[in-house]
Image (cartoon, rainbow, N blue to C red; front, side, top):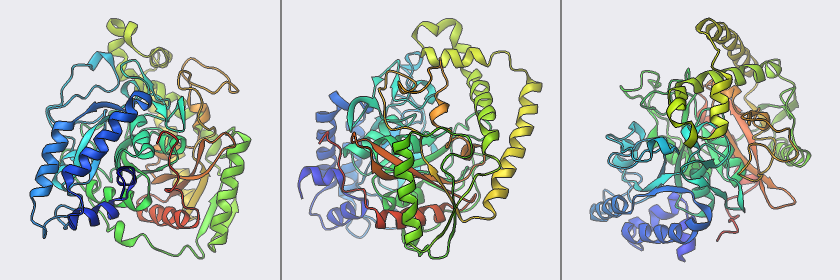
Amino acid sequence: MSDEDLCFATVATLRALLDSREISAVELAEVVLRRMESLEPTLNGMSTVTADLAMAQARQADARPATDRGGDDVPLSGIPVTIKDLHMVAGYPVQSGSRIFADRIAEADSPFVARLKDAGAVILGKTTTPEFGWKGVSESPLTGITSNPWRAGYNAGASSSGAGVGAAAGYGPLHQGSDGAGSVRMPAHFCGVFGLKPTYGRIPNWPVPNNDQGSHVGPITRTVGDSAAMLKVMAGPHHLDHTSLEADPADYPGRLESTLQGRRIAFSPDLGHARVDPEVARLVADAVRAFEDMGCQVEEVTPDFGTLGPELGRFFWCAHEQVMGCYVEEHEAVMDPGLVACIREGEGTTVVDYLRMRERKYRYVNQIHSFMENWDLLLTPAVSVAAFPADQLQPDHWPAHAWDWLRWAEFSYPFNMSGSPAASVPCGMTAGGLPVGLQIVGKRFDDLGVLQASAAFEAMRPWAFARDPAR
């Protein structure tokens, strides 16, 4: 197998090669690190490369007895992984895309990082993110533009920018992202890979984000099987996250194969209000037909909750960014101007305003869950547009705004508020060669159902063979 093929190989393929000793974990880590080194000047997806940690973990993996490698205790032994730089790897930078924290070092591992380590994964580094993860565009004051592998200088999606790039560009199979308003699904859409936002609380998150249970941790991978393998390791309750779900993880990798025959599926091309570029709409509609071919009962719908989302989404985005307002007076000159504008817009929000709007949000969330009672899955576009230049918040053909990038991401944040599992699966390429994603939303807690539907679509419309031009 060539070095490039190793970089794009699945967990299952790498597991077989490592277990048979056709390749060592050290050799695998070296191959992927060399690929990073060759592509990073163009892609800029890594904020920190942890080569020393990776090599130490790879040597540890190679030292395990053959009977221990890849077993239940260390299922990811020797498998490369990256961590988003909003989360902590003890002893390494956690800069959050901000010049304010350029020198900050993590003192502990995030709980899911500790689980990945315990499972034998080899951590190659930290991936780029916009400042504090505030926007859906792959640029930050600290690291600059992270380029879409399919077109240099274009948006790779955010806030899990580097994770999406790493999955698309062959930086190994597993990349951790997090999603507060689409930040796993948007990079997956823009980069042509698979991104899963699990049910809220499925993967513990610590420190617990102060955004009213909006942030979800999830995997970004090339294949659904790799996502399932990563989710199984990261999921499960944790005492430091009081919002984490009590249930232990299911055997996601072992239960992916399932017939969709007879499943009731709703398709909403616009949630009743969202603008969608025609080429994106066409590719998504064509992808929906694959579910009909699989024997699903598909019906186009306009959910009653749809038009209530925009006002809520923008209110809470500005309100929650107020936690960063304490930095503006001293550091405004080095902060993202869009973030500052967003903070300024929410400055007059009172506690009473917040609680009244929160009451409306709870009714909205109830409408989402009530709607889903009648359907097994909901299909929508993942994002309204294909990639555009990453030095701007909106595409040229969309109205400009100082901070509001949510205009082209209206399909994401509703399911952060509801805590529902949702995935972006690649469903085609524009005429200009840019990826587009289909969003698959499930009932709360039905992460397995979303994975099974994604795997069935992947089998019908394979995408993992497509490699970005950066290769």
